[in-house]
Image 1 (tube, rainbow, N blue to C red):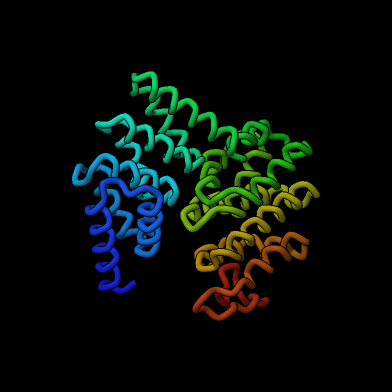
Image 2 (cartoon, helix red, strand yellow):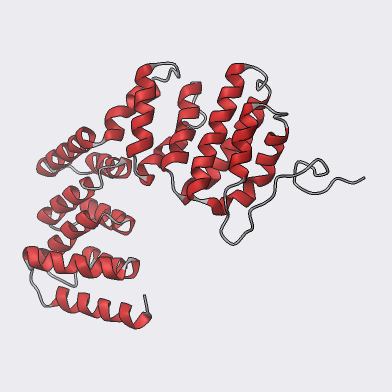
Length: 302
């Protein structure tokens, strides 16, 4: 968005906020439209009003309510600040309800921390109810205990894994970074599948490190049926991730080539070859290395 347009949006937000004493639904809808139009820059302007005292409590309550509908990362810490330090209980209560609308692990952590600090019974009850609503409505919170029981061959585990791979948001998917090195094989490998299926660019480091480490470990048992199947599944999951974020393929290409060259015609090698054929923006599709090339793709010395 052009700077002049951003300035115009910010001016409209400032005019709207300062001329109202709490404008209700019409005010919130117009403000939400402007914030979505302006993006992070306008969200930062709203943060200033939420945490400051430049406008009335009634207006701040409307701003806090709107923040809960937009659910931007930019509003999490300001809402937490209002919950824990706000000077008005109605404002703090609305911040609790807005945080609950995020309905994810971050919201639960913020509310749980607030519950330990706040001593007012009415606010404690509001927080407790918000926590229960998140747990009841969240697929992740409801099904995570099933997943963590592990057991790769369990039908219940497989159903849970499939649901997570289809429904989780990128933010929820990050929860599974913590389980990549879980003691149960199914939980560990399933967490990698979830990150590849639902994670965003922010989980690349964890995806790459797991693939490098786990791929070489699985290579030791790749001659057997079970080991080969696990290696193929690992490669298929990575292909799904790189299919969405192909810009990371050049960084992983040497590792993929190394594993592919160890396949010696095995079926899991074909999965790795398919992965290498993914198009990368701004890069020509690499040709498969021939007999005179090394695992890194460079010609071998004669």
